[in-house]
Length: 255
Image 1 (tube, rainbow, N blue to C red):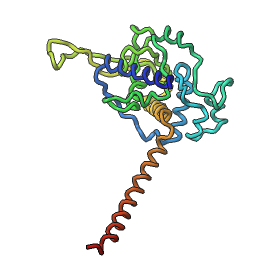
Image 2 (image 1 turned 135 degrees about the vertical axis):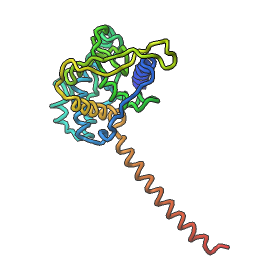
Image 3 (image 1 turned 180 degrees about the horizontal axis):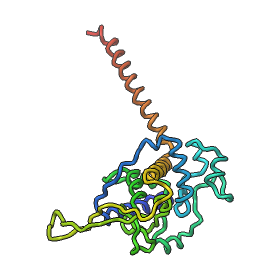
Image 4 (image 1 turned 180 degrees about the vertical axis):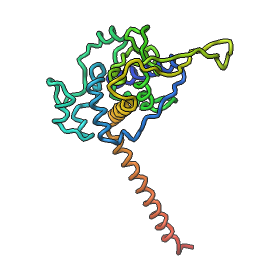
């Protein structure tokens, strides 16, 4: 329980920092239908294991839980595990927290509940992550050489840059609508510096799959919960109708 609370507090702190430094967030809408698409979830799990699990743990999720999204033990072993890991292990990393803090300025947070913890007034946690993963740009003033529109001055480098390619962010100075005498730094768009292995559309789709997996990982039973909820509501509606008719039949002869 202490580890779970610490993970939530760390993720919340990162979100709060992003909102404080970046102001009001304008988030892109995550395609929520991906969470019920097994192929998308499987691809997202593959991206997570290959790109995220090197630094970020998911210590409250076991690899064998991926059987819930249609993977077999053998597929998990062949595609998602290192030779020393077992299917029943939790998703931990070998990265030393002290080294991570020295390299990135902060210990990478556990991602088991990241999609649930990053919800805000600007959108859902999935919206936040979907926008964040597609908003990295080159910035030579940062120690890692990367920055992010959603999370300014983020310590995390763009680990997916080979897929997306390298981009620069274009900013312009415009008059502050609240004080014309002042100028504000406004984002105008991205400039593609080098191509990636994926087209922009393919990269957006891959990030949607990754975020779908992160959202599923935060609550693996969410799809079943929604189905059960719909069934309960239908049952209550039918039961209410039957009870109403029984009540009318019982009292019809009572004066």
